[in-house]
Image (tube, rainbow, N blue to C red; front, side, top):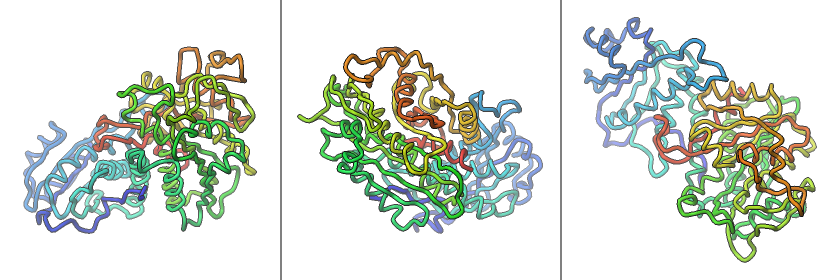
Length: 484
């Protein structure tokens, strides 16, 4: 099972059915429109420049094929800061070129030239990322000609193109994992696929905690989640150690419930339909892991996937059951559909008790519906116990158009987890579900600096660059920005 989709924008040539034409795309900033030499190079009449300036997007037929112009408005001064949720120049360019992919592919040209005028390196990177994101399809590859990139009539540096395509591929990897059906991607096949992918890596070592090792490690919570499934749980540890890396590692944990029916607290039909996406946090981590290996970043990183399937049979966890976590806390099950926090808890405890103790712990999880209610599909609720860490992550999310908003760790709400029979319940009786879930996880981080992202992980076409409905890759660009 291939879990990393191929890069489309580097294809040398398309199928023979494509037309012998050249589609040229001009992506310009408003300030660069009048300064560019496109009228001379393409024999375009001067009057078209005025029309482009007014309409912002214009298509005409040139001497060799279609020509598409798009003017992008740069972010306004004062809007590029992390406490105002808005687009960055990177994300504006990403969505601008992504929005043109439908038209580009419709032209069916053997060659496609993407021309940038007035865009800085960051915007060019964003535009190429947006192109590759929009080209991704789960079912079949698009028929596409060879693509080349130019900046003010000069070829874009190969290093810039490679950087952008590596970023896009890592995001598409996260999307692709979410899109895989649960009968193909379960805890066992997922773990095996990760190990196979990094089998020849010189910087990434993969260790799999199978059910026997999880029992030995006393990971009672994640084992309880998966005890009714035909495929037992796994925790996957990816240890990234490039030559020359120094300092304490960063640990990143992803929730990977490969399908969540809710357990005995069964979800309704409508609520269960997209539950293959409940491993979206692990997809974020795995997508980032592919970028990390390709980037060669000289930092130590430990990545963990907490994999389980929440199912039903005669062995299913019951409301009222009590299980012991790896760190020794006894947890009463108040609701079997609050299982993701249980799987994360044991994985997080493994992460913070390694011989090389992490300086920072970050987790990603499709944890609560409450987060979507407050933030919608494409803004992430972020919780943190350290202001400096929160600021760095929020700035990374803002700059890379992967938006997050910091939410409060209001600790009085923890009283909602009171249990008369165990140290805590897994379900709170207090409103503020996303806050409560974060407070539950906080009991498993020790004294580590920590940030928690409660993601949705799915898109239905809100962003132009995410044409394919399904996984959104939420969180990957934030991590890339944080580690750059």
